[in-house]
Amino acid sequence: MFRNLQAIEIAEGALLADIAVAFQFLKTFLPVGGGFFYAMNFIVFTILVLRRGVYVELLSMCVAIFVMSIFVGPYSIIALVTQGLAGAFLGFTLKHRFHYIPIALSGALAGASYIFILTVGVAWLTGIPFDIYINGLHRTYKAAMSLIALTAQRVGLEAMWQQNFYPHMVTLSQWAFDHWALAYYCLLLIFFVPAILGIYAVVNSFVRMLGYDVRPMLSGKSRRWLQRLRRRIVKLAVKRKTERQRWSNV
Image 1 (cartoon, rainbow, N blue to C red):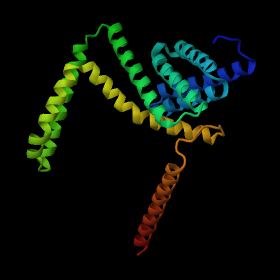
Image 2 (image 1 turned 180 degrees about the vertical axis):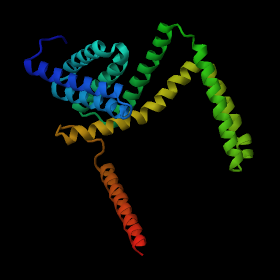
Image 3 (image 1 turned 90 degrees about the horizontal axis):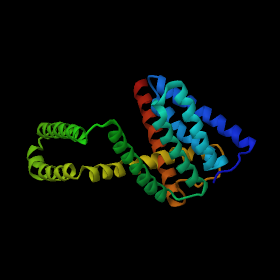
């Protein structure tokens, strides 16, 4: 795995590491747009994998972490590690033309495991007992149930909520609090499947726009169906805009 880097690999790795540091600076200090700059680093590290491989990308990630640690301290280490590992995963799967379904499933499994281990590790290092987190979740759950009950009462569905949904919610929540670790991991899996699909769709479209030969996310009938849906949405938007202009001129 370890090898001597070529001059072009060092140059490109350093350049893209500087770009990642710049985006992280913008995310840290700008009051708005942090999510955009955070997502851009996924694309930066993915492009580096497509051009020079995972080894150069991981070294570039380490350089970015070192530079950010000098200027702002260890505040952004976790963010850059997350972006670098995600970029390595996306770049590797795009380079080897994996289908998006195994990418979403394996990415969700890896992401959920990473966040779960990170959460447990931070709690263990800081010495904060898990009871504090669980009590906070209890308060959030009670507030959410009160809000749902109030909403059901306002819309006239209080009886349906009390008879059909509330008992099942109580049973499910009790099981989740009794097995909080498994429930937390399952929630992470449920969250990461659409999140990985969304990130993959954006990165895939961006690198294809830059000219990289990667497998498109959708092909065949699915791609044609999406194109037809997009054309219909555009036509509907244009039609409504024309109707609004016509009524405004009347």
